[in-house]
Image 1 (cartoon, rainbow, N blue to C red):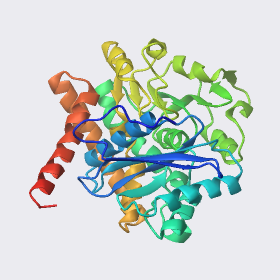
Image 2: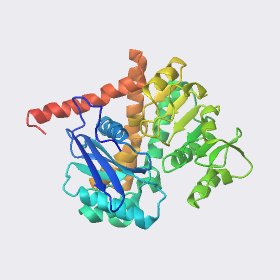
Image 3: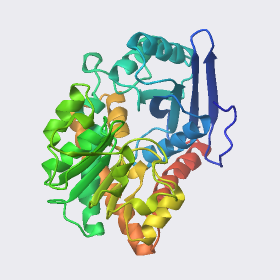
Image 4: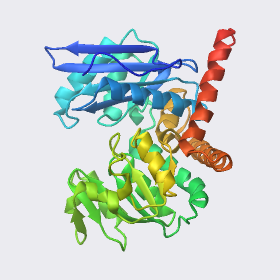
Length: 371
């Protein structure tokens, strides 16, 4: 993992902390991007190839996401280098050691992200006595991954975006890249609205059926710890073949930078809802816009998870959290796309303007001693 963040501006990052414990094999980092709106909240990601640069980009995405959602929190991200499928005992040791190393860092609230879950947040809470969201129900949490908070938000983003993309949700073909905590729930909630899942992918490959896949059967496979390649009576393609599946709605719910300038032309869709954080490069979004593909940015479309985590941290109920997700994500998607259409600009540009206004307003208020 590199030792310097080479990107930054007047908004951040405010703080970068790297943690190494060679005896444990722990290599991790925290980037606190901005705390003008309040203590930063952002997930802990575990992956073998995490970098400090990626962590900084994700932290900025959280600053923008929390601001756009109107949350009293700044943005941060933490990463831990390792295989997320490591033995549970080893994962617990590493997560606890990382949390313990950050015990004095009051600017950061942990949340779950790729490779971590409610159990990991319970370990963090145990180490810190607090400063964790996305906890198990037994600890007063709202299990956002289990309930599908981010997927719930994506479904409401789809409802708001569909008219701008000139499609109807009922009967719309959907392809989901990454059938994990975000992707599988997005598929479920969209199917409940009449959309048809025609393709989904995980590490094992892409399962594809233009007539429609059985979402319940796919959910059962994943719940049993099995791969999508075990789905019967469907065509199994290479994992990256998900890029070329003809559909109306395409949802990236996997890793960063999966769509770039070199492969954006492979997408055959009308609407993209970014379920993952930073899943497209800027050049890819511009190329897709030139082809008339509407892309709803990550920090607008996938804000459901952090809204849920922040409301849990504030003591809200599950019902209140999900009502807030539906309202905020729908309204922000509609506002951003309307602004983009009116000003003839990319949705991301309109979304950045919305989110940055909130951060800069908070900075100004703090400067005058109001916050």
